[in-house]
Amino acid sequence: MPQLPKILRGSLTTKISPGGTPGSFHLPCRKVVIEYCETNPSSKGTRDFLLSQCKDLAKRTPSTEFVVKQRPGKHPIVRGFYLNNRTKEISLQNLAATGVLPKVQLLLDSSGNKITSLKRRPVESVTESARGIWSALHDTGKDI
Image (cartoon, rainbow, N blue to C red):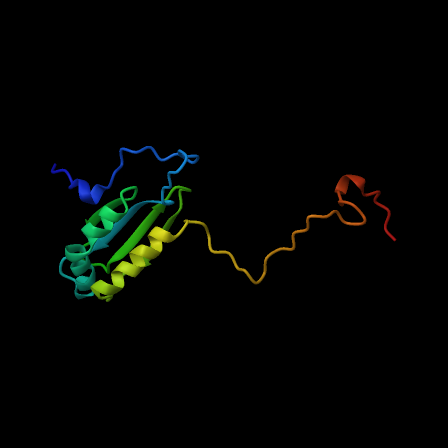
């Protein structure tokens, strides 16, 4: 089985640890898988991206592994795998080669966490309430 070029595999020899060493930074995205079809017209932009810009992107991000797979008869997708064991998937259907790079960069810059709403965040207070913390153990059972 032929080995993938080192350019596409990235530098996997460095150990990625949660603490890391002082002065080192690793992207939360550990692996990017680009899947495309060789004959499907919706994959044309993805094929052009792989021929022109993928090697440069892999060189710029050595801590991320890049894998290219064929997906016959289906639309192209890019899938990101993160250090927190989550994955994100983005469709590349009918995108031009210049439109594929921002989608891949979006996965690289993402943390992998779930998207949370900023409008309905629970109220968190740093001070105690006047009545203290309620507990079912302190309930006497008397109904008023």
